[in-house]
Amino acid sequence: MRRSFPAKPKDFSEAELERTFQEVVTWLKEQKSKAQVQDPAPERKRTRKRKQEPKSEEAPAEGAEHGAPLAPLAPLPNFKAPENVPGIHWMRSEQCWKAEHRSKTLRLKMRSRPMDHSKEELERAFNEAREWLERQKATDSCAGRAAPVVPVATAEVQRCQGDMKRGHKGICWTQRERCWKAQCQINGSNRQFKVKPKNSSNEALEASFQRAVTWLQLQRAERAEPAAAAEASKAVTRRKARRQLRSFECPEPVKGVCWARPQQCWFARITDAAGRKRFCRVRPKDYSDEKVREAFKACAEWLRLQREKKQKDRELTQASKKGPRRIVRSDVPRKKK
Image (cartoon, rainbow, N blue to C red; front, top):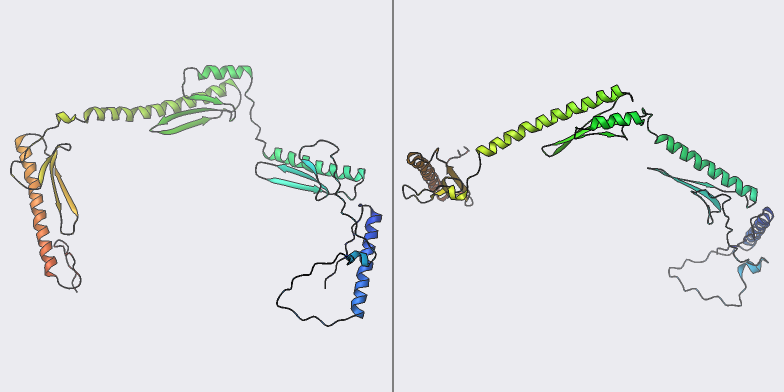
């Protein structure tokens, strides 16, 4: 049978902690001496758990047997910070000062626990947490600090920048990166070019600005050449209106051949022995009677050859009796066994 003896101190003073500790040690020695004198036989293990009977109100408490009445639980003390420092507060559950610092990628925490609840010890732990928080902020600011750059913020430099940008669309000065940025769009893709001056002098600014202007002019010239070619091709290959499309009748009655008006060509279609659809389009070189007749004959000849090939494939399929029914093509050489 397991037994326990709770001894809770009334406060966190050293005398009260020592008194409760001695009570626990005394009770533990008594229990060990009783167990050595009375050594009862171990009880037989029971497979089925029995319901615990409710304790009678007359039964004395466990602590009352040993002369130590149970004290009510005292609430944990709560303290206010000596100074209003963001990021530091008192944790009542752990009885300590907690400092928390958040950077761009990390979340750091620190706990400073006082030895007791005296005013001096609380201030010492609070100062320790504040020093740690200041060190973390200083480290974070040094890590995220940018490299020293040339200052470009004087009135004369700003005036030069304004004069340079006039008349050049697509070039601007980025104050954050301290450079000239030229950008344009070619065939749906955005391109940009950055030039950083060596220093804040007018000569360096002018030289870097001229480099950006030269790059932008080259990009615009490259964009103008394909655009002019595309416009010329559109003018040459302009799609005709439907009313301008010509139509012809078949010179000879051939089933399966017709004139496709949208494509302006002779069109033939057939389904082979394997069930696949095959097409043929023959466009005449011009719309004279001779060229139209030649294109029609070529399309009709292709259709005749495809029908002969389809008939041969059907005959070979019917002749083959080995295994399941399958389609044998005449144009594919058969493997020798």
